[in-house]
Amino acid sequence: MDEIKKNEFKKADDESFDEYMIRIGNACSERKLTWDQAAVVLNEATNSNFGECAYRKKYKSWKAGYDYALEHMCRDTVADELQRLKIEQVKMRDERAATNKVYRDIARAESIKELITSAVAPYDKNDFLNIVQYEGSGHDVIVCLSDLHTGAGIDSAWNKFDKEILKARLESYVAQVFNIVERHAAEKIHVLLLGDLINGHIHINTRIQNNENSIEQVMTAAELVSNFVAELYEVCQHIDVYSVSGNHSRVFPNKDEQVAGDELEELIPFYMKARLQNLAGIEVKTGKLDPTFGGFKARNSLVMYAHGDKDSPANVVEHLTMMVKQPIDLVFLGHRHTNGMTTVHGTKVIESGCVCGTDSYAVGIRKNDIPQQAVAVIADDGLTCLYDVKLEKPAKIVI
Image 1 (spheres, rainbow, N blue to C red):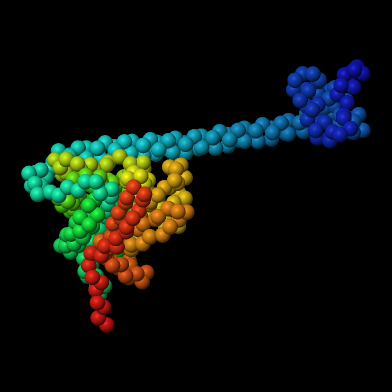
Image 2 (image 1 turned 180 degrees about the horizontal axis):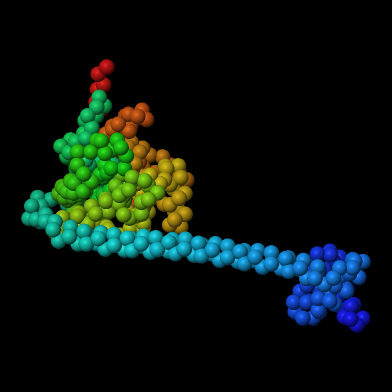
């Protein structure tokens, strides 16, 4: 072997013998050296006297192990990648199925709304001839309807509640709203349906208490609320109806599985729209900012409303102001089953109670919910009066 080739294949100072032998063996595989020449440079580097056969066998053993490891490593990598791709494929299939379900549900909901619109018999406008009109008073009235819990059956020391009692309490409410509207000569009524109009089936307690299934609850609530608004028409012919769904009308008991806007209560405004269509001046608003909250102008005030399960009186002003990017004058909430008012950053937060009264859940957390609703009177300069309307006297507890 010439000196040039010897220098090319000389062992480097930082090279171990195994690394050196593998480099020389690779050179033999690439036919840059013969194994006889490899034995010469390897023996010189280690001051040994082995034949080419010893080095060739050692390199061959190493090469076989290397190739085996490389093959299986690649095979494992490919297998892992195939497994990952299969998982992604399943995910995509699940997402596609979920998306298709949403589309089917939307189509089904639209079909139900169309069926309701075509099947519901509207009120006859000739039944509303003895009506009263007020003009020029400068007042609007905001009437809350929150937490009816239609379908619940309650019989306890604190409360009795069923469909007939619900009707009676709504009749009491209408009569008291009549007095308020007449007292202030209201020019317009804004009716806020603040959610939980039905009891639903989200908790074991609610399923035990229910006298009607969820669909029956929706139909009963829709007819009762339509009647409520139709009766108000006798004292005011300018009525806007706004609505938001509560947590009790969700389709799935697990709130994390619920899609916003997929609540059963979303059908009620469409029923009302069909039922009240002949009464000119009543407008049932079916479009809102979001399924969970909405807003409108009453006189000069910006009014926002929500059910209250996603907000508290302490944070709702901040939350909704951030959402609409403008100052809010009034916020109306339901959900907590008691009337109340607080002021947060200059904004009045008004809570409306419940129509159902104390149920087993309230007893469990030591709350006695009197059936009550909130009615607000609005002038050009804002809130002028707030009524705490009690629908029934508190029950006397016999011990």
